[in-house]
Amino acid sequence: MRVPILKQYDYLVASIQSVLSDEDLLLLRDDLTERVGQYRSKGVIIDVTVLDLVDSFATRTLRAIAHMLKLRGAETVIVGIQPEVAFAMVQLGLTLEGVGTALDLEEGLAYLKQPLKGNLRHAR
Amino acid sequence: MENSAGLLRELVAHLRQNRTQLREEWVRRIREAKLLTKMTDEEIFSEATSVYDNYVAVLETGSVEALQAYARDLSERIIPRGVETHEVLGIVLLLRDVLARSLFKKYQGDFELLSRVFDAYEPAANRIANTVGVSFVDQRERVIRQQQQAILELSTPVLQVRERLLILPIIGVIDTHRARQLTQQLLLGIRNNRAKVVVVDITGVPAIDSAVANHLVQTVEASRLMGASVIITGLSSEIAQTLVTIGVDLSKMNAVGDLQGGIEEAERLLGYRAAPAEETKAQAQQA
Image (cartoon, rainbow over all chains, first blue to last red; front, side, top):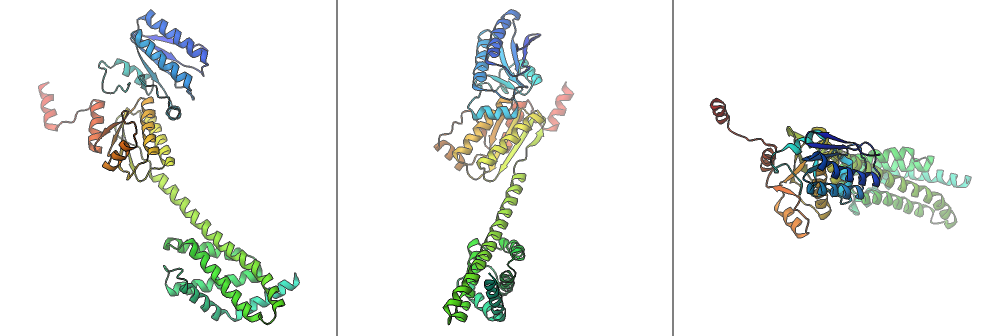
């Protein structure tokens, strides 16, 4: 299933609705890198609340998306990683280095709106 | 079979008859072997009496239920006193020995009969020793399980001290099981309280090994995935040395000296600024 991408002022919101296949993820990557230029977006939020499993391919792809979008001039933040998922991910060594994360959509928007790149940004 | 039952009856009568003397002999042997040193002589004597009577009753009826209940009750009383498994097994085996010697003395004239008496006595005695030992160990394990549960319930408070700020004070030794539980509680706490910063205070942790250190690193990572920063406070000098020596990658950890410093740092991250009431009043008036 193709992930819907919503434009919200300067930001794009990709809200994942169901479990994604590898092809869906690659499609999401293509869509986002395309749309960011099209809408001149400053930030992208990828909402993964519904996922109860994030495997290594998904992690790698999400990280790649974040880095690609950075090159296209937009900040990326992944929101809605569930406690069990977060724990499983770190146990597998999948830590999304260099990618912003936030609790949910609201926090993700707040994260992107911060004028200063500092303090609570835990992206490395 | 009938014969063996008859022998057991005879045996029980013999043990009843010589109750006082055999019991005293047994208590003497217990003291000699330096068992139950944590109990007074009177206590040993009165417990010995009960065990003796129960023992004979089992030989008579062949049913271990009463003995089982008694052994459980006895264990419950003596475990908190620090009585060890080997002591309990020791005294039961001593009684078995005392009684066997007495039987030997009584029947030594007739080896044929003696052998049949032992055929009847030994299996029953083994069963008794087995029952008492198992009851004691069961009881002990039950106590251990209860304590584990109690520790588990005490061990993981996740407290909100300010909007968006949680503290997780950890006290006592962390093993893998507990570390996992701590992480789970913390991650759930982050979601439920919508926390942005978490201060994990390990002042009360005496030591840490590499597995637990790595688990801490994982907890920090997992919290970040949920959008929260973790500050670790109260690393003792021993722990700091251990961590560096075993080469844990601490670049991802934000460590502050003590809990106070940790909370101040957290407030700074959240954009709070503590100021004396006078100063804030003056500022309000200026504005």
